[in-house]
Length: 78
Image 1 (cartoon, rainbow, N blue to C red):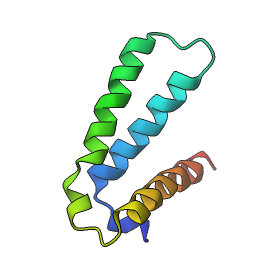
Image 2 (image 1 turned 120 degrees about the vertical axis):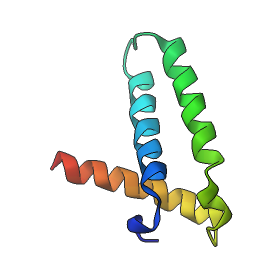
Image 3 (image 1 turned 60 degrees about the horizontal axis):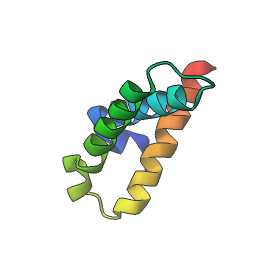
C-alpha cells in the first residue's frame, strides 16, 4: 500500500503514537501517567479513524501505516 494513500491526520497521529511510545519506553521516563494517557488517547484515535471504513484490508492497511510512518521518520533522520 502506498504511503500517500493515507490521510495526513492519520499519519500524523501514527507519528505521535510512535513518539509517545518511544518516550514511555525510555529508561526512567518522566510523567509516565501522562504518557500512558496520551498513548491511550492516540490509540483510540488511530483505531476509530474513518479511513478504516474505506480500507479494503484493514489489518494490512494498519501494518502499512505503521511501516510508512517508520519509513518517513527514517527519511527525515537521514
